Image 1: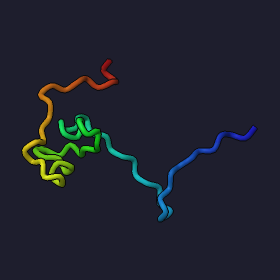
Image 2: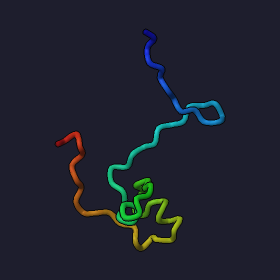
Image 3: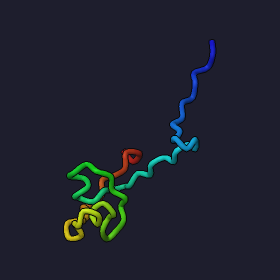
Image 4: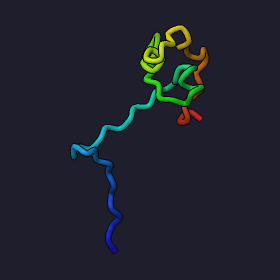
Amino acid sequence: MDPPEQHTFIAESGVPGQRRRKVRLACNPCRARKTGCDGRKPVCTACTLRGWEGKCGWQDTVMPSSSAL
């Protein structure tokens, strides 16, 4: 029996794409909209593009990572 094939997503340019980097904690507006947050502080890029500099903020408490459970 043949081994299972490894599938890799390749962009149209023929170069494998980079994996998305996960942010430990998204800002509150990005969490509410369930959109991508780059975690840049004091204001993330998504909030800057939307003109939400005054709304961008993070929770005071950080939940433990899933590996700590």
